[in-house]
Image 1 (cartoon, protein in one colour):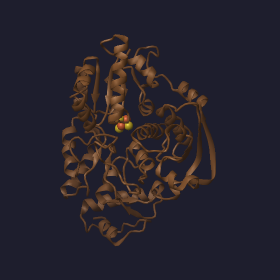
Image 2: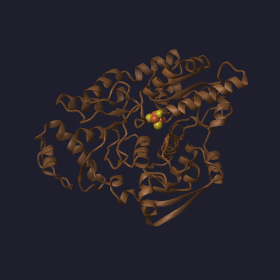
Image 3: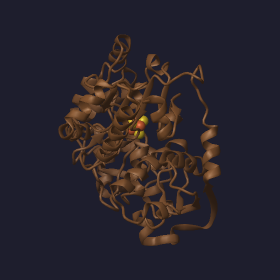
Image 4: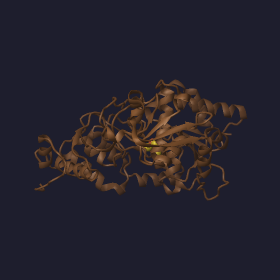
Length: 430
Ligand code: F3S
């Protein structure tokens, strides 16, 4: 046990004991890591985590062997999270995705530790074998943190949703730190956990003629704000003030794009999100700046997205919809849209192999209720899948394909080409 560890962070008697090894070597090491991280972020103290965990690391890639060794140490000392947790989407979906032979081999090699890692996750307290999705807060998955609860999540799209739409409190943590904090039940108190860290430094005024595409708007918000907190004015003119499923889905997609093109971890939307409803414009810092987003700015942003395909005029071979994962209602919307397009055009097959990505439980419910539609779509080259498109594109063989998407996040991190919904349907379906 290392002696003489001294951190510039106030600790309770229990935390001191955890640091000093009274709760075992693994807890001691986890405390050291969390405190070092907290010190680097100028945290004054630790706070208790009060919401269920969600982990970002969902893939058993051999290159992260040290991470698996850390999990082994936690398990060897019988440690697990105090409540069941969810985790990001699986990297591979052999059940639903139509892989090429070589592609499948490459994935099996890349993620050869997947089964072993999933056993580790089960030992640590994974909610169930289907708890793999970034949209863990959807009702079919059920990891819905209460307003005001303290979390230590890392998945950027889930963090921004939990903070903004649900009013939970969570920093954008790093992979690995999420599991350590949640094993300890402690998070360093800084940034978005504090009242001052949740104040907005800018007022974004939306001045568009119609409701913008959520992922395009989110991409522009991210570019404008980077990691700052915006206070959005003008959304409720289009979305109303009721936080219903449709509004949540819009905010889910907008937030995910803002978290990827910038590093937005929290936004307030006037008249809509819980803190903005309660505190209104008192959430704005004294010297806040004003930013206007209008149709012209959105159009310019769309034009500025580079086409990273080798041949910019090529046709898409693959289309991903559902990054972040689709809700049941969004899945239904897309299935109906695609089916109508195919019928109208008289086509039997979609032009590009199309994947609608959603949590396993959402896919199961949808299939159960709509078996005929799913079968028809499958025959047309449109599948429902629980994988993460970004992890799919980590495979160099897959990354060579010309991929189209309506996801700002996928566009930011890969060579996938961003298209607005109608254009995407035109290019990929008919
Ligand atoms: Fe979710 Fe993967 Fe997209 S984690 S947000 S589907 S990149």
